[in-house]
Image (cartoon, rainbow, N blue to C red; front, side, top):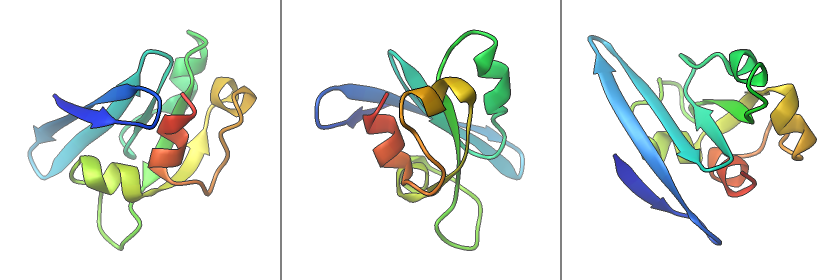
Length: 97
């Protein structure tokens, strides 16, 4: 677990290694962002805001910095209601949660 300092609160970031791929996500008390392994639609069933982030480069997201610097590619309906949109950075999305 890695603490992420945001402007008004903190978040927790996690990286789990699964062979050739890492599961990377960060959460606050009211939402989360994650790499391409995360299915954000599932979180709608629990009214929990979630956004999927893609790498800003050509590779995969491998760590928390990649996640924060990446670009939001999907948001669930719950996150959309909080103002999250496709195209913002992972950090911007996490700041809104």
